[in-house]
Image (cartoon, rainbow, N blue to C red; front, top):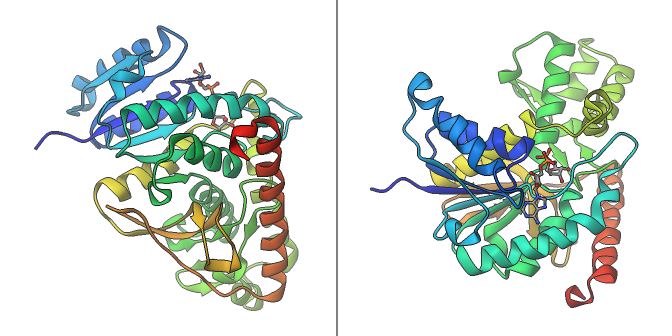
Length: 320
Ligand code: APR
């Protein structure tokens, strides 16, 4: 059987890391696409040359021609500009919306059967726009945010509790922005919910609140340190986990920006929710119950995403 084909639109920091991880995990052959001629070809060749050392079988190529992504099984989109210090994800809206138009059309015309994972920010609005421009089915287009936000939360918690991060599960819902909703009640150490761990004296409510805030600010913390761009190792690892769930029909339960129509009382919009990812893309949305406070935070986040989608419609009237 031929290897799956993975197309990466955007061969920058995240795109290059995605290509490396996909090759190391032998998820399939990789095509890197970018408008900056030479970058995708150079990164593809560099990673291919690491193959004999690491011992992976995967073909890598770079291109500036959308025809080369033809028949891709998975497309991961990072094309666009990242944040600089002082910028919010929302500041990227105008520039990256134009990028989503050309990328969406490129996918529509060359890889209409792919499972598409968007990473470009502001995430929830960009994945919505990408779906609109590409015209692909909603279950085949999603955004990577929840896995990353949950991973950041899990990392901070494992350090606080001094336990393996393998035993820490976490749930982060809502939009991928300052309004994201880390759900402490659904986050656990080996099944014990965080509020119970506070009662057991493993941590204090103040420390937990600080970790929740650090999770919300997780992207900005990295931007502030790097100064020249935004995070790329953890975002790439998170998207690869989603791609693997699709390619191997793993039915993983992962939070991601999915099209929600009915669940959570929402009518047709993209926002971060718990999903099941398998061979049919986003196969299910887990309509979990929220407490009054959690619902209020989620509503606030949903409204922030709606505001960005309206802004997109204002910039590009074909989306209205
Ligand atoms: N089509 C294809 N590629 C494009 C286009 C386009 N229209 N416009 C820009 N690019 C490419 C750039 O040439 C660059 O190589 O997208 C790449 C982006 O790479 P980086 O600038 O290194 O950004 P990265 O850190 O990879 O982040 C990409 O992901 O997390 C988000 O906020 C982040 O929106 C940003 C995206």
